[in-house]
Length: 156
Image (cartoon, rainbow, N blue to C red; front, side, top):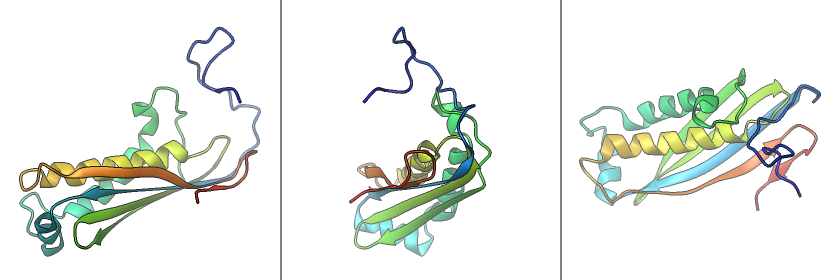
């Protein structure tokens, strides 16, 4: 298996996708942020001083997916068709995060889904750090990818 983001001289390079067929593509990523049970209780009660933690984190994740190419140097700028970010409190001590990104295009949206989850988790951390600096962001991973020449990938 060869890595696609290097040219013949071994230098980092953006992949040329101009000859690829446009197909419907989707990617889903998941992760979580683990915190003290008291911090989760504050989030659920809407008592975090900075506002609606889950709502703000959802918007941050959506915005991040749209800006992935500004953050990761070799990602293509993409016209995304749909981005969803769901944050679900999971008692006693975490928030589960799932992002799904869709488009019709020549390259996949895995990085956009992973970026959405990561930034949503970081936003939760930022909004709650005054109450709990020991929060941990964990298990960010791709769980589904469909479309393109390589077809479907689903994690076990």
